[in-house]
Image (tube, rainbow, N blue to C red; front, side, top):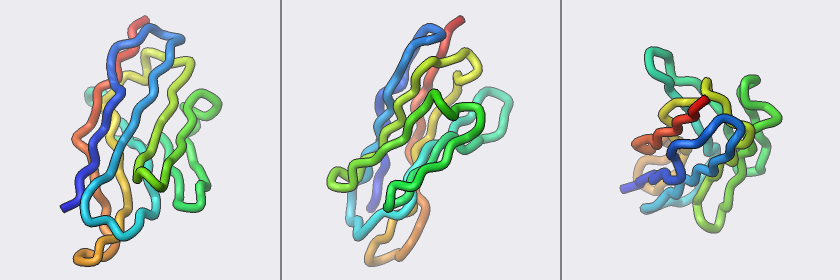
Length: 120
């Protein structure tokens, strides 16, 4: 059984920073893409950032230059450093990973989400 567990969310003032972490555990053979989505109240879930196993990255236009995604393959962990936060960054942030296991092959897994609230 594979699990993704996020941490690092919370309340921060506009202009502040937070660092999200997401650790994958279980019977993992390898991990392809890891990343973060977010969903604000009344809005659709959107991609924030993603990183491949080769550490190629992609970002939503709204976070470019402010957020940085990274990963530690030895720890099966992905991070999202969020700087210069804005109230519009307020959302539940979800970690996801494309994980290969011996039983299921390649499959997407999701964390339960962590709330980020940015006050003005």
